[in-house]
Length: 369
Image 1 (cartoon, rainbow, N blue to C red):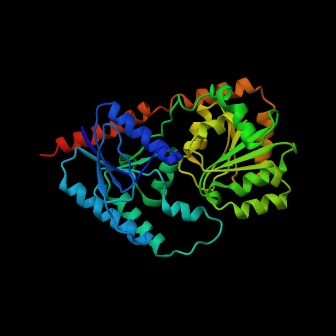
Image 2 (cartoon, one colour):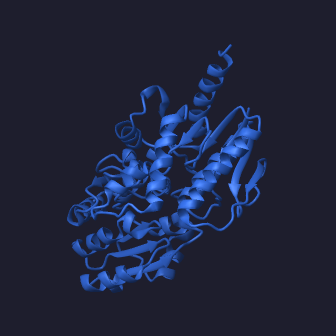
């Protein structure tokens, strides 16, 4: 099957990028003739034919429109069995709503957000995508419900295909390999209760609440490691006001997140809006429990009290209680439960989910006289 995949440039350095790279690699391994349509900056991918869109420098709103129009031109010039887009483009057979709904994201912000030109363009593209694309793929049940409620997409056009995770790269055995060295690098004592926050875009990911939860813990020696890209200044100031500034390791973006999962006792993710969150799967695969937000699709993987907990993303005290309850459990049991909950979510399982959709689409095309 000749598959055209439309996606922004990716590598293995961020959660979304690692998830896309894993899917593309698995599609190739399963025999698909994969063509990748991306922007400048995408590195070659083994087994994949790369098509580069060369857009000029543009403001964000104009760039979104230019990408949609340019992708449509490429789609129209080729002969593809299936076109799958991970971006808000036009002319695809399958749209993977990896970012959820822009409309839902705007509604999740507690502060009124001005609807500038960029947001209006994104909402217009989103309406068109959900109205015209034959198959819509959400990456969690929560996202599927949101798409159905906000845009009226019927069940016949709406599927859920969960992300996959690299179960070899993210593994509990990494603790023996990296835990001591990673803690030493971050200045975390060997016996300290260490929390990990991973995510770029600190406001949406809920870093403020994570800091407040650290301050609310009944353990003044607990530490929080922050991995990701964002403006740290306001959060450093907040940490100082909360009296926990000396207990936080500001690590910035890191290309080796597996080292930091190995260093952690729990991951805390109080996201305000999260269609899924690859960090959930990576942490669980690493044997690390997750205190997740009920606003995140990844919370669907959490079994309360076994491999983590699900809380209100703005309730720091509830997060602190959940963390202390997890700490009271036997570490070996928590590790085993976390790992077991991630093991079904392979890239092969993700490809299988998409394959069912591809067959449905191609069978329907074959039935047309």
